[in-house]
Image (cartoon, rainbow, N blue to C red):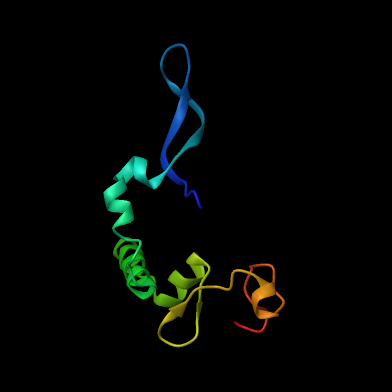
Length: 108
């Protein structure tokens, strides 16, 4: 069983006068708290490539000058051709040594 946490919002402490001060603090919550259980579980059966395209489109909508290579780099993914693939989770399963970024060292 896994538990996922997301950044729900950022807030600042307030002084006696009610004015914000100091660093912003990230408030963590489960995705179900923010978007609801039904919405979150509706994506569980989704194809990984479909999920990737949704994430990519969302990032490109916010940053129109970004290309797929930059989006993959941001998300810690690697591109073998025109379609991205997820990084390897562990070196034990593949027998390959991982570099500092957590991806196999022989892959660019």
